[in-house]
Amino acid sequence: MVRFGLFGTGHWAGETHGAGLAAHPRAQLVGVWGRDSAKAAALAQRYGVPAFDDADALIEACDAVAIALPPDVQAGIATRAAEAGRHLLLDKPLALTLTDADRLVATVRASGVASLVFFTQRYHRNVTTFLAATAADGGWLHAEATLFTSIFQPGSPYVGSAWRRQHGGLWDTGPHALSLILPVLGRVTRVAAMDGPRGLVHLLLSHDSGATSRISLTLDAPSAAVSHGIAFYGESGIETVPNGDDTLAGAFGTAVDQLLAEIESGTRDHRLDVRFGREVVAILAAAEVARTESRTVEVSPVPTGTS
Image 1 (tube, one colour):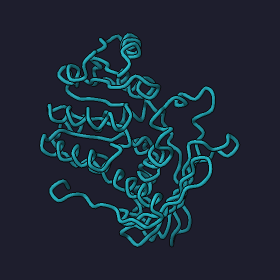
Image 2: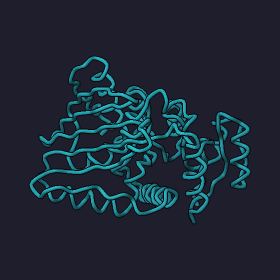
Image 3: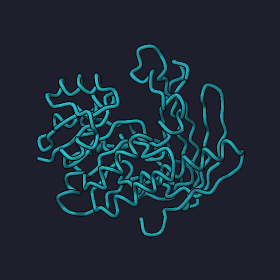
Image 4: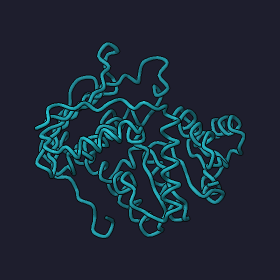
C-alpha cells in the first residue's frame, strides 16, 4: 500500500482524485488538506481520514501526493513534496508560469521521485490505443481541435473557479487538446494566437515534424454550441480521436496504477511525467505572449539537464 495525501477540496478533488484513491486496492488515502479548512474537514470525513491544517504535515505523513488545486498553488506544494521525497500525481496544467514549471522539473529530477500529470483522456485505454496506432501510421499534415465548453452556467461545479475565470480555456482545456495532439504530430516549435468573443482563443501551431495544428477553445460557449472534437488529416485520410470509455475515477485509478509501476520499477521515464507537463506549459506561455503581442512566438525548449 502506498500512502497518499490529497491536496484540494473542490469538485475535482472529491469526485475524481478522492474517489479514485478510495477505490484503488493498493492506495491508502491518509489525509486531506485544503485552503478552506471547513471543506477539508467535510471531504476528510467523507473518506474517513483526518483533515490536516498544515500542508507540510500531510506531506510528512504520506508517500505520495495527489494534488487537485489551482495550478499556481499546485506548483509550490508539488515542489515541496518532491524536495521531501514524495512521489507526485498532479493535475494539468502543471503551473501557470514556465519558471515554476522549470523549478518543479529540476526538483523532481534532483530528488528522483516518480511523477505523473493527470491529462484525463490519456488514461483511457481506448484513447491511448488510438493515439499509438495513429502515430504509427504517419503522414499526418494537420490536426484540428475544437473544445467549446460551458462551465459558467448555473449548476456547474466550476462556476466559482477563480483561476478558470481568470485564465480561461487556454489554460484549462488547452492542455487536454495538446496532450492528444503532441503524441501524433510531435513537439511544438512556434505558436500564433488570436482572441475571439466569449473567451474564445484560437491557436495555430507549427510542429517539429513539419505538420501544423489549429486549436479553438472557450469555457463560455453558448449551451447550444458546446462541442468537443479533435481530428488528424493526412495521407491516410481523416482520423477522429474517440471519447474516453472509462469513468473519471476509473481513469484516475489507471493513473495511480502507472505511478505505482514507476515507483516499484525505479524507472522515471513516464510519457506523461512533469517534463511533458512542462512542455505543455511552455506552449501555453508562448501562446499568452502571441495573443497579447500579435506575433508568432517560438516555444522554449526543455532546459539542458532536465530531459
